[in-house]
Image (cartoon, rainbow, N blue to C red; front, side, top):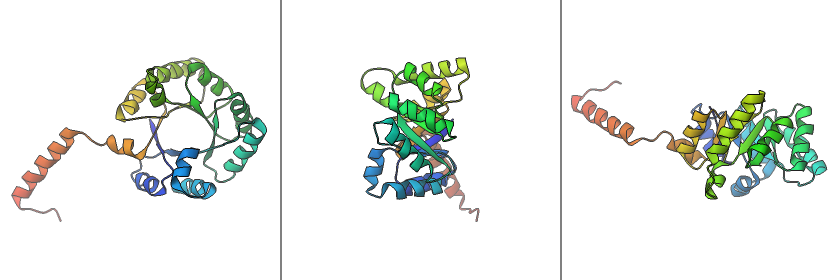
Length: 217
């Protein structure tokens, strides 16, 4: 499974990119707004920090304007993936951009039928939101399983990018199902490191080592 980090915080992206665990970045208008910086400057800087895809989202609702925005965003860097909503205009834009060789991330997916449409429109990535489905008492991971099965049935190239991950369990369960990517806030990626037995074992090792009075350096 690939890990994308879901943030527009440049410092956090740099820190995580240095670990070698980050395969890409996803952003959205809300995350960009939180940064308080110029939209285009943020996107270009993120694209320079990571080698993998950086999702930059369009904000227009109609196809023609969305297509113009998508082309402008794609021109910012070679690793930009244009993000469009799962609407008729978004899918039409996805088809046009993908035909031009531009990677498209279709976002705000909440059903398997929507995911099927996105794949047929040529999406490079589909972003189903598991956490938001959980919020309304629907098991978001069931949707991931359905999408993975449908895509496997027809050998679609669209990668399943699990979004709205609220914790490590969403990530590991999605990995067991066979999702291609999980995009997570920096906090969730850090949480994947944590286990009380790791901390307990390390503490015991360090105490035993200190008792020897030796040094490796």
